[in-house]
Length: 141
Image 1 (tube, helix red, strand yellow):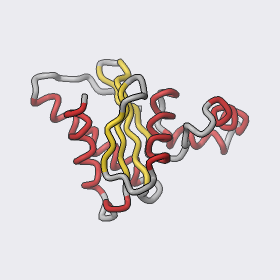
Image 2 (tube, rainbow, N blue to C red):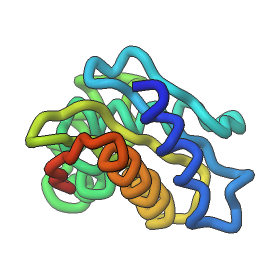
Image 3 (cartoon, helix red, strand yellow):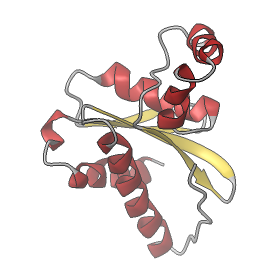
Image 4 (cartoon, rainbow, N blue to C red):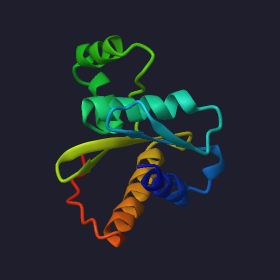
């Protein structure tokens, strides 16, 4: 997965002019091993976004909205994973053939841009996998 993670890490900054401020992490399906790129001290935020997206199988943009509707669910999630999740946009699960294979977490960009950067990296990952004759069926959350 390391070569595939590098594709995401290398392509994600292309959507932002502020790429020097961003941090990117790609976690595997267990959430333990990660490939980190462009870390500028926001390592917790990027990892917290990817970890939340992986374990809760949803984008952190959607998960962050829980605070606006049923806040008990939002605070419940925060209590379940103390110090490990960050429920702000920028975390996106990686799914291949309806199987969760990892997650991307990006931090340091303006609201909404983190997730766009993650999706740009994921699009490059799709092309990379297709070029290797692995045609994934992608489902974006």
